[in-house]
Image 1 (cartoon, rainbow, N blue to C red):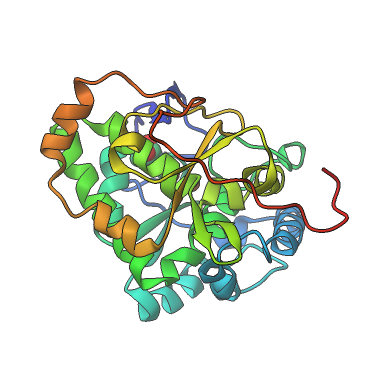
Image 2 (image 1 turned 135 degrees about the vertical axis):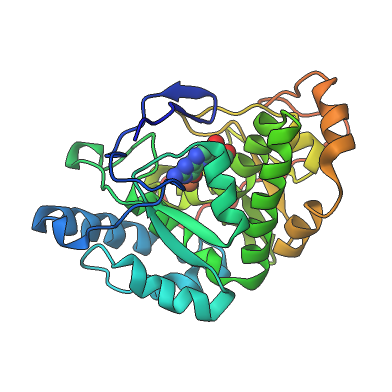
Length: 292
Ligand code: HBI
Ligand code: FE
């Protein structure tokens, strides 16, 4: 199938993965039997390293759902996870060859179907990969789909994406996805915690996002996020903090049309500077004895 180059964040590059067997909706077979022993071993190493980092860094809702991913020692079968996910929140995961065009992506989310990339990164990409692979999608995104409120937010986001396309507002919605689903933080009585998949699937950024003094951590505000550009190939300069997943879901309630009009005629807001009225969240204190 001829595949349109896909924009992921701000850059467009030919997607990685085999799209020749993809269906009209860009879904494909996982072909679980095709994974080699070295791929299962690499997935297991990625999983073991990240799961150790989660307590004290990931939000409770994520930590509680990690067990739903099944095997830690091999790449799970998507169908096994979908069986549990359907029962939990009526979502399922579907296999895709990699990044897919935004319309197809939003369409899947609007139908409570989360696209999970079938290929795994190479060993030399162990610490960093720009495009989402099966580890990023499964470990980073799938656990929170077991949370009913977040699951509803993701479907609302999908529906909003289909509307945004008609309004030529996809770049603004991509920012909302980026600063929440991929790089979102949540405030808890015990300090800041991570819920964004892009952070949770990255060993370095999980600590950086919560404890570094370099980035700013701002209160989530829909229009602030829609007006704030982002970087796709480095740690973030800004993180946005929600107080609850309900706050996130409620933010998708209004009709975005007038908001897009306001945002599209306003200048972008600084991703590394705060507005006079903005307060910042302090970083989490480092655990006793941890290296600064
Ligand atoms: N495709 N498979 C896949 N996964 C994504 O996360 C994804 C995508 N296509 C587009 C996209 N994300 C971003 O442009 C979102 O902001 C829509
Ligand atoms: Fe992602």
